Length: 262
Ligand code: 16G
Image (cartoon, rainbow, N blue to C red; front, side, top):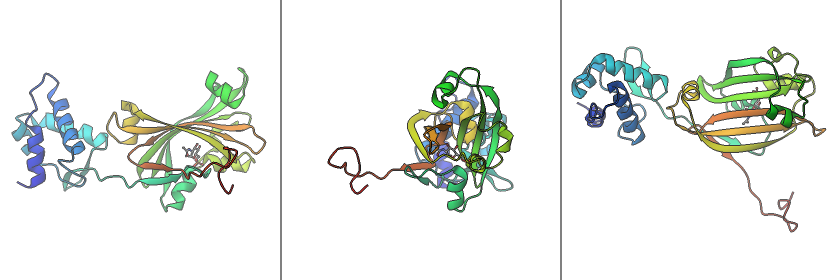
Protein backbone atom coordinates (compact mmCIF):
# COMPACT_ATOMS: atom_id res chain seq x y z
CA UNK A 1 0.00 0.00 0.00
CA UNK A 2 1.45 3.42 -0.84
CA UNK A 3 1.91 6.27 1.65
CA UNK A 4 -1.08 8.35 0.56
CA UNK A 5 -3.39 5.34 0.92
CA UNK A 6 -2.02 4.63 4.39
CA UNK A 7 -2.55 8.24 5.45
CA UNK A 8 -6.10 8.14 4.10
CA UNK A 9 -6.85 4.97 5.98
CA UNK A 10 -5.46 6.50 9.17
CA UNK A 11 -7.89 9.37 8.65
CA UNK A 12 -10.79 6.96 8.14
CA UNK A 13 -10.45 5.09 11.40
CA UNK A 14 -12.84 7.39 13.25
CA UNK A 15 -15.73 6.76 10.86
CA UNK A 16 -18.80 5.42 12.67
CA UNK A 17 -17.65 6.80 16.04
CA UNK A 18 -20.29 9.53 16.13
CA UNK A 19 -24.04 9.50 15.39
CA UNK A 20 -23.88 11.44 12.08
CA UNK A 21 -24.70 9.58 8.82
CA UNK A 22 -21.71 7.46 7.78
CA UNK A 23 -21.21 9.11 4.39
CA UNK A 24 -21.03 12.54 6.05
CA UNK A 25 -18.45 11.29 8.54
CA UNK A 26 -16.37 9.76 5.76
CA UNK A 27 -16.66 12.95 3.72
CA UNK A 28 -15.55 15.03 6.69
CA UNK A 29 -12.61 12.75 7.39
CA UNK A 30 -11.37 12.92 3.81
CA UNK A 31 -11.84 16.74 3.79
CA UNK A 32 -9.89 16.98 7.05
CA UNK A 33 -7.11 14.79 5.65
CA UNK A 34 -6.82 17.17 2.67
CA UNK A 35 -6.99 20.29 4.87
CA UNK A 36 -4.33 18.99 7.24
CA UNK A 37 -2.12 18.07 4.29
CA UNK A 38 -2.15 14.32 5.10
CA UNK A 39 -2.95 13.88 1.44
CA UNK A 40 -2.02 16.55 -1.08
CA UNK A 41 -2.97 17.73 -4.59
CA UNK A 42 -2.62 14.94 -7.13
CA UNK A 43 -2.55 12.09 -4.55
CA UNK A 44 -4.67 9.14 -5.59
CA UNK A 45 -7.51 8.03 -3.37
CA UNK A 46 -7.60 4.29 -2.61
CA UNK A 47 -10.28 2.35 -4.50
CA UNK A 48 -13.89 2.46 -3.34
CA UNK A 49 -13.61 -1.20 -2.40
CA UNK A 50 -10.48 -0.68 -0.26
CA UNK A 51 -11.95 2.34 1.54
CA UNK A 52 -15.19 0.44 2.23
CA UNK A 53 -13.26 -2.53 3.65
CA UNK A 54 -10.93 -0.38 5.75
CA UNK A 55 -13.67 1.82 7.24
CA UNK A 56 -16.08 -1.12 7.47
CA UNK A 57 -18.85 0.63 5.57
CA UNK A 58 -20.69 -0.12 2.33
CA UNK A 59 -19.36 0.84 -1.11
CA UNK A 60 -22.58 2.82 -1.71
CA UNK A 61 -21.70 4.98 1.31
CA UNK A 62 -18.16 5.49 0.02
CA UNK A 63 -19.43 6.41 -3.44
CA UNK A 64 -21.86 8.98 -2.03
CA UNK A 65 -19.11 10.66 0.03
CA UNK A 66 -16.66 10.66 -2.89
CA UNK A 67 -19.27 12.03 -5.31
CA UNK A 68 -20.07 14.88 -2.93
CA UNK A 69 -16.36 15.71 -2.65
CA UNK A 70 -16.01 15.67 -6.44
CA UNK A 71 -18.99 18.05 -6.69
CA UNK A 72 -17.45 20.44 -4.17
CA UNK A 73 -14.06 20.39 -5.94
CA UNK A 74 -12.04 18.62 -3.21
CA UNK A 75 -11.52 15.54 -5.40
CA UNK A 76 -11.39 15.02 -9.14
CA UNK A 77 -12.23 11.87 -11.03
CA UNK A 78 -10.38 10.85 -14.17
CA UNK A 79 -11.99 8.24 -16.32
CA UNK A 80 -10.07 5.03 -16.27
CA UNK A 81 -7.46 6.14 -13.75
CA UNK A 82 -9.36 6.82 -10.53
CA UNK A 83 -10.01 9.57 -7.99
CA UNK A 84 -7.43 12.16 -6.93
CA UNK A 85 -7.11 15.13 -4.59
CA UNK A 86 -7.85 18.18 -6.78
CA UNK A 87 -4.84 20.16 -8.00
CA UNK A 88 -4.23 23.45 -6.20
CA UNK A 89 -5.40 26.58 -8.03
CA UNK A 90 -2.77 28.75 -9.55
CA UNK A 91 -3.43 32.10 -7.91
CA UNK A 92 -4.47 35.11 -9.94
CA UNK A 93 -2.76 38.34 -8.89
CA UNK A 94 -5.06 41.27 -9.51
CA UNK A 95 -4.05 44.91 -9.27
CA UNK A 96 -6.36 47.16 -7.28
CA UNK A 97 -5.31 50.28 -9.12
CA UNK A 98 -6.57 49.49 -12.62
CA UNK A 99 -10.19 49.49 -13.70
CA UNK A 100 -10.37 46.44 -15.94
CA UNK A 101 -12.99 43.83 -16.78
CA UNK A 102 -12.86 40.12 -16.03
CA UNK A 103 -12.64 39.30 -19.75
CA UNK A 104 -9.67 41.67 -20.21
CA UNK A 105 -7.93 40.42 -17.04
CA UNK A 106 -8.11 36.82 -18.20
CA UNK A 107 -7.12 37.64 -21.80
CA UNK A 108 -4.02 39.42 -20.46
CA UNK A 109 -3.08 36.18 -18.70
CA UNK A 110 -3.69 34.12 -21.82
CA UNK A 111 -6.72 32.45 -20.23
CA UNK A 112 -10.03 31.82 -21.98
CA UNK A 113 -12.85 33.53 -20.09
CA UNK A 114 -16.45 32.45 -20.27
CA UNK A 115 -19.57 32.89 -18.13
CA UNK A 116 -22.41 30.72 -17.02
CA UNK A 117 -25.52 32.87 -16.76
CA UNK A 118 -27.29 32.57 -13.41
CA UNK A 119 -29.79 35.35 -14.09
CA UNK A 120 -30.29 38.07 -16.69
CA UNK A 121 -33.39 40.24 -16.64
CA UNK A 122 -35.21 43.48 -15.93
CA UNK A 123 -36.38 44.12 -12.38
CA UNK A 124 -37.69 46.93 -10.24
CA UNK A 125 -34.76 48.35 -8.30
CA UNK A 126 -34.17 47.18 -4.72
CA UNK A 127 -33.71 49.89 -2.06
CA UNK A 128 -29.92 49.30 -2.21
CA UNK A 129 -29.84 49.60 -5.99
CA UNK A 130 -32.01 52.74 -5.89
CA UNK A 131 -29.67 54.37 -3.43
CA UNK A 132 -26.40 53.45 -5.15
CA UNK A 133 -27.55 54.08 -8.72
CA UNK A 134 -29.56 57.19 -7.77
CA UNK A 135 -32.88 55.84 -9.07
CA UNK A 136 -36.47 56.46 -8.07
CA UNK A 137 -38.83 53.68 -6.92
CA UNK A 138 -40.50 53.42 -10.35
CA UNK A 139 -37.26 52.98 -12.30
CA UNK A 140 -36.11 49.61 -13.62
CA UNK A 141 -32.72 47.93 -13.59
CA UNK A 142 -30.96 45.26 -15.66
CA UNK A 143 -29.51 42.54 -13.47
CA UNK A 144 -26.78 40.25 -14.74
CA UNK A 145 -25.62 37.38 -12.56
CA UNK A 146 -22.82 35.21 -13.83
CA UNK A 147 -20.45 32.52 -12.77
CA UNK A 148 -17.13 33.70 -14.20
CA UNK A 149 -14.94 30.90 -15.48
CA UNK A 150 -11.34 30.97 -16.72
CA UNK A 151 -9.80 27.99 -18.48
CA UNK A 152 -12.75 25.93 -17.22
CA UNK A 153 -12.09 26.84 -13.54
CA UNK A 154 -14.91 28.80 -11.85
CA UNK A 155 -13.32 31.85 -10.18
CA UNK A 156 -16.09 34.22 -9.17
CA UNK A 157 -19.82 34.86 -8.98
CA UNK A 158 -20.70 38.39 -10.11
CA UNK A 159 -24.09 40.05 -9.71
CA UNK A 160 -24.13 43.32 -11.63
CA UNK A 161 -26.89 45.92 -11.72
CA UNK A 162 -27.10 48.64 -14.38
CA UNK A 163 -29.92 51.14 -14.73
CA UNK A 164 -32.35 49.97 -17.45
CA UNK A 165 -32.22 53.48 -18.94
CA UNK A 166 -28.57 52.70 -19.84
CA UNK A 167 -28.93 48.98 -20.58
CA UNK A 168 -32.59 48.38 -21.55
CA UNK A 169 -31.94 44.83 -22.79
CA UNK A 170 -29.58 42.76 -20.60
CA UNK A 171 -29.40 40.18 -23.42
CA UNK A 172 -27.24 42.68 -25.31
CA UNK A 173 -24.47 41.59 -22.97
CA UNK A 174 -22.94 38.47 -24.43
CA UNK A 175 -19.37 37.86 -23.26
CA UNK A 176 -18.38 41.20 -21.68
CA UNK A 177 -20.46 43.73 -19.77
CA UNK A 178 -17.82 46.45 -20.16
CA UNK A 179 -17.66 45.86 -23.90
CA UNK A 180 -21.47 46.21 -24.13
CA UNK A 181 -21.37 49.41 -22.03
CA UNK A 182 -18.48 50.73 -24.15
CA UNK A 183 -20.57 50.39 -27.34
CA UNK A 184 -23.04 52.99 -26.05
CA UNK A 185 -20.38 55.23 -24.48
CA UNK A 186 -21.12 54.07 -20.94
CA UNK A 187 -17.92 52.26 -19.98
CA UNK A 188 -16.93 53.30 -16.45
CA UNK A 189 -13.73 55.31 -15.96
CA UNK A 190 -13.46 55.11 -12.16
CA UNK A 191 -14.64 52.71 -9.45
CA UNK A 192 -14.68 52.28 -5.71
CA UNK A 193 -14.28 48.76 -4.43
CA UNK A 194 -15.00 47.35 -0.98
CA UNK A 195 -13.52 43.95 -0.15
CA UNK A 196 -14.49 41.86 2.85
CA UNK A 197 -14.04 38.25 3.96
CA UNK A 198 -16.88 35.71 3.92
CA UNK A 199 -17.30 31.97 4.27
CA UNK A 200 -19.25 30.35 1.47
CA UNK A 201 -22.70 28.84 1.88
CA UNK A 202 -23.62 25.61 0.15
CA UNK A 203 -25.07 26.91 -3.13
CA UNK A 204 -22.23 29.33 -3.87
CA UNK A 205 -19.60 26.77 -2.81
CA UNK A 206 -21.05 24.31 -5.31
CA UNK A 207 -20.98 26.86 -8.12
CA UNK A 208 -17.35 27.71 -7.34
CA UNK A 209 -16.45 24.02 -6.88
CA UNK A 210 -14.92 24.53 -3.43
CA UNK A 211 -15.88 23.02 -0.06
CA UNK A 212 -18.75 24.69 1.80
CA UNK A 213 -17.43 27.21 4.33
CA UNK A 214 -14.35 28.05 2.22
CA UNK A 215 -12.89 31.51 2.72
CA UNK A 216 -13.85 33.93 -0.04
CA UNK A 217 -13.61 37.61 -0.87
CA UNK A 218 -16.84 39.53 -1.14
CA UNK A 219 -16.35 42.53 -3.40
CA UNK A 220 -18.68 45.44 -4.02
CA UNK A 221 -17.78 47.63 -6.98
CA UNK A 222 -19.47 50.95 -7.65
CA UNK A 223 -18.31 52.37 -10.99
CA UNK A 224 -18.65 55.87 -12.36
CA UNK A 225 -18.77 57.62 -15.74
CA UNK A 226 -16.52 60.62 -16.36
CA UNK A 227 -19.55 62.82 -15.54
CA UNK A 228 -19.55 61.41 -11.98
CA UNK A 229 -22.78 59.45 -12.55
CA UNK A 230 -22.82 55.92 -11.08
CA UNK A 231 -23.08 53.39 -13.89
CA UNK A 232 -22.50 49.97 -12.26
CA UNK A 233 -23.25 48.37 -8.92
CA UNK A 234 -21.77 44.87 -8.72
CA UNK A 235 -21.59 42.45 -5.83
CA UNK A 236 -19.15 39.61 -6.36
CA UNK A 237 -17.79 36.59 -4.56
CA UNK A 238 -14.22 35.67 -5.50
CA UNK A 239 -12.50 32.43 -4.53
CA UNK A 240 -10.09 33.03 -1.67
CA UNK A 241 -7.82 30.21 -2.83
CA UNK A 242 -7.53 31.70 -6.30
CA UNK A 243 -7.15 35.47 -5.92
CA UNK A 244 -4.57 37.86 -4.49
CA UNK A 245 -5.63 41.50 -4.74
CA UNK A 246 -2.57 43.72 -4.77
CA UNK A 247 -2.49 47.46 -4.02
CA UNK A 248 0.44 49.83 -4.27
CA UNK A 249 0.83 52.08 -1.21
CA UNK A 250 2.64 55.42 -1.06
CA UNK A 251 3.62 57.79 1.70
CA UNK A 252 1.04 60.55 2.18
CA UNK A 253 2.06 64.01 0.96
CA UNK A 254 2.50 66.94 3.37
CA UNK A 255 -1.25 67.64 3.36
CA UNK A 256 -1.86 64.01 4.35
CA UNK A 257 -4.09 63.49 1.33
CA UNK A 258 -2.14 62.62 -1.77
CA UNK A 259 0.59 60.09 -2.43
CA UNK A 260 4.13 61.32 -2.97
CA UNK A 261 4.82 62.10 -6.58
CA UNK A 262 1.14 62.09 -7.62
C1 16G B 1 -14.80 42.68 -13.11
C2 16G B 1 -15.51 43.54 -12.06
C3 16G B 1 -16.98 43.65 -12.27
C4 16G B 1 -17.32 43.96 -13.70
C5 16G B 1 -16.70 42.93 -14.61
C6 16G B 1 -16.97 43.19 -16.07
C7 16G B 1 -14.19 43.04 -9.99
C8 16G B 1 -14.23 42.68 -8.57
N1 16G B 1 -15.32 43.08 -10.69
O1 16G B 1 -14.91 41.34 -12.85
O2 16G B 1 -17.46 44.68 -11.43
O3 16G B 1 -18.72 43.99 -13.89
O4 16G B 1 -15.29 42.94 -14.41
O5 16G B 1 -16.42 42.10 -16.78
O6 16G B 1 -13.14 43.27 -10.48
P1 16G B 1 -16.80 41.74 -18.26
O7 16G B 1 -16.68 42.97 -19.07
O8 16G B 1 -15.86 40.66 -18.65
O9 16G B 1 -18.23 41.26 -18.25
